[in-house]
Length: 143
Image 1 (cartoon, rainbow, N blue to C red):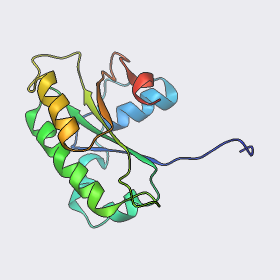
Image 2 (spheres, helix red, strand yellow; image 1 turned 120 degrees about the vertical axis):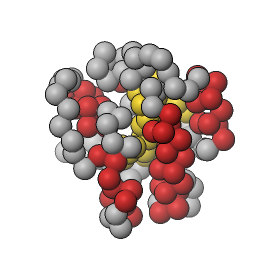
Image 3 (cartoon, rainbow, N blue to C red; image 1 turned 180 degrees about the vertical axis):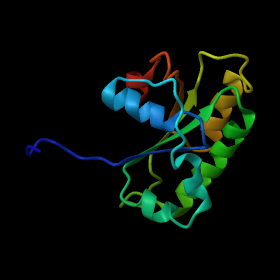
Image 4 (cartoon, one colour; image 1 turned 90 degrees about the vertical axis):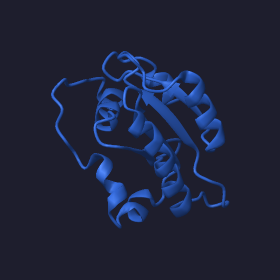
């Protein structure tokens, strides 16, 4: 890395099957696989490893599936867990973006107004609807 390069750790968390691994592959390699292969996924929250996993992160993305209301409501738990275990060196919360993934599917289990209100009430820096499959808003969200 040159003296002008910077390395940032960005967490990508959320329930299983919301598209976390696909997001990282789409963003970093511009690829998408229709064949779902389960990874550690949403299981981090159920172990004592989250504090170690979160350590030294500069930002966070919390994803949910717009067609699954449970993944949306669990986003609040993910945010609370993150805020309770990690802050920036200045004591501020780590900036966290909410991604409403699978926006190419319908029907949505939550409205855009609900997501907007939820994002503001829970301290997210904002939210964006995305479709990793269709490559919609991926690069824009990650800027």
